[in-house]
Length: 255
Figure 1 (spheres, rainbow, N blue to C red):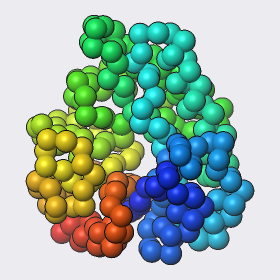
Figure 2 (tube, rainbow, N blue to C red; figure 1 turned 90 degrees about the vertical axis):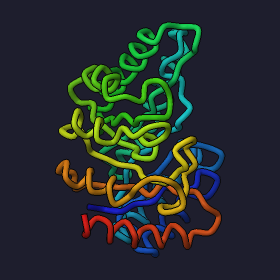
Figure 3 (cartoon, rainbow, N blue to C red; figure 1 turned 180 degrees about the vertical axis):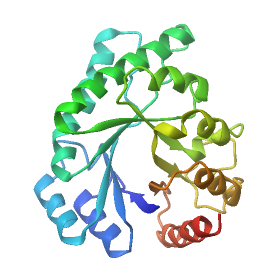
């Protein structure tokens, strides 16, 4: 198991990678998005230098708000192009995986259409990512497509698509971790964790919210997973993040 952190997209990503390496993280979950870390703003050479010097790994992350489920074909195509623009820099940085987020679409349109439009967008991305040696991974988000059944359709859209489980998202207004792992553990390649009160996606430190972390980490480990886990925790005081890295490693060893 490898523990990583996500960069704050409002800060310099090179400095964020340096901080992650200096504080014992195994990798950075690099989100390429504004206001300070968009694909146009990142100094790829400087960032690659930090990764090479420190041995810090990298997982690719894209903006959570891209409209893959829009009813307008040109808008969906624009979302796909926005992710494709990250492929070359992510490949240069040594990433193997690039994540995308399921879009809730527009409520006036049928659920089945929104699901299909997301699936088609992700299939196109999976196909285009191959030229860069990248694999597209689909993250569950807190919306009406946050079910193992919906993900069957999404992941089956292309044979190279893989699963990115956000356990916090799976625990908002219910508990879907076991359902997701039972259905999709064979395609799981990356995990996000943070705590919440089970009503909203709060990105709280572990132990502050209502999620049973010994249980959740136990489910994950019992599924056979042993890969990258990102602490997606957003607090101004990063001592919480450092404590949670220690806590996660302990939970994993005890599971």
